[in-house]
Length: 271
Image 1: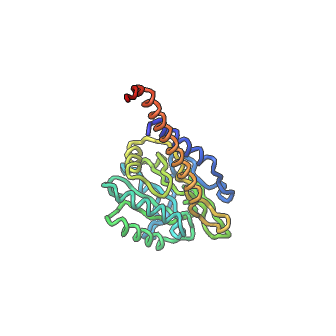
Image 2 (image 1 turned 90 degrees about the vertical axis):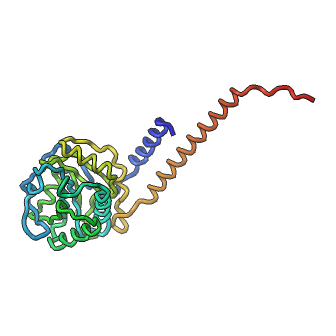
Image 3 (image 1 turned 60 degrees about the vertical axis):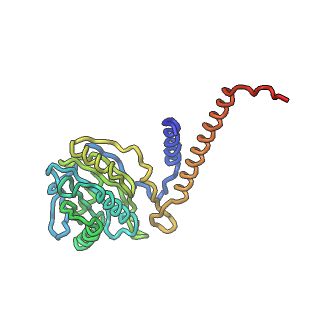
């Protein structure tokens, strides 16, 4: 496929995504990219060992930081984000605590440090390597909400369902705590993660224009929970397949027509 054709295909998908409607129940939920914002390192949280710890403990060590907001009892999306992160860093040769840090913070003030410790143990078993630089924190004095708003991560509590409405994303920080980049979705390419961490370590900021994966999970007003919008994904994938197939056929017909024009006319048939 030519570069122009591939670009048109991407533009087609982007248009399809832009035209998809976001449920009203998700109003105010999402991410505002606030590159260069210095997060308040004085905000305190409760570490998995039950001791209060300021965010500054994980900053200014010469290592970039992966910051992700979840809640440990989330029935669906948070687990997918955590599993996706674990899978991605497993493919890296780097180790949390050596080349970078990970700070996972619960946005649910009801979740105490024993749950954070349990979640950490489960993820480290899946990671299958020591990760001294992966920290699981609980909220303290509503500081999770304050930090999330600073980082542009917006979420909302659903009273009826007793769940949080939120998006799926990671936030990469420079070693001193500035927002450097956002990664969206529930699966992160190891190359993108490594490149993002390298740039964050060097103090570089990069905007992520592709939010396609951000809305792969949407809010179902009937069940009041996150569900995979398989219909939209299949519709987008099917439309893209038709687009590529049609373009390929056009190229084939055009080539056949050119070959026909260039071929010499048939000679007279001898009797």
